[in-house]
Length: 378
Ligand code: ABU
Image (tube, rainbow, N blue to C red; front, side, top):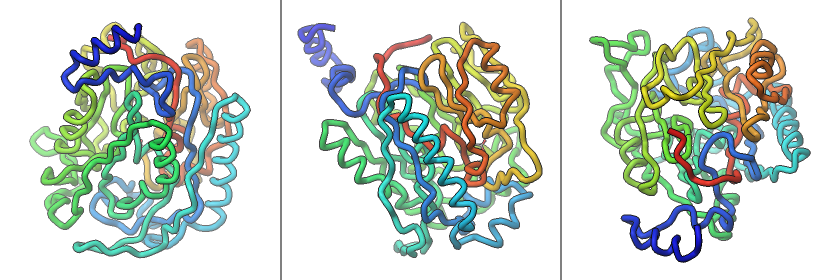
């Protein structure tokens, strides 16, 4: 697009802005999950705390993990777990640095410090999962309000980075915080009865804005979001109203009965190629009709895989370096073989010790800059 055309487009678009005009110059630019990665934030587990159950935490804790929360809730994660997961995060950072990608890490932050709002008190969680807190739409970083009390101030652990992106020309939009008071959570929600009258139930009342960024997945101009135990209707509507009008937000629903984050449910890997969770996705919305749907083998998990804050499907929580290369956990060998068969080039790394913190490689990262343009793939 020439400068003159850009200028005309910017005069014509409803908010007077051409999103793509900053694609070359902004430190922030990412429109999908697969364009060539140039800069990424990798989380840290230093000082990670186990959350003290609030209703939204309780809503997603698997029964087999309740003992862990009872034992450690409100206390630091055991030192050995932090050490091993920290080594894996450093390894992930090194793999990407060696690939020529700029890697940034969050600043030290004291998550053990108790804080008090007018409604409740809590301690923090961690800065392990930048994906949960931030998402990038073109040249704009959106900071999510979150829905766990232990994550109320989590964004601040990344503010040195965000301030720097802002100073260098990036746009940074912060969603309004909710009170997270008693009314914010639905008192009648019972995680053992996640369906009522054929309708999925969620722990969040819809009285204030709530979303985690990881409930959104980007395919250029089309962005997909699910309602979950951390994302409500008001949160989705806030994003819809505040992103540039080029982005279309599609709400989707799948079969996960305790949903929290969409990045183990549908995983777009390249234009026209999407990996889907076979347990939860029986049918994709018609917009994907022209896309190739890839069905992965079951995850590799053993008795000692401590999945305390997630489903069994962290296997799908991968990070694309580009349309071919994908970073994937090294023990997920059936998936690695399937990816090769489909023409991808998996890059296996050890990441098992990170699983007990609730995510894998996708959760642990935020792709701040990818090459490419804002396009429609449908
Ligand atoms: N934060 C990713 C976890 C999603 C899942 O439990 O499958």
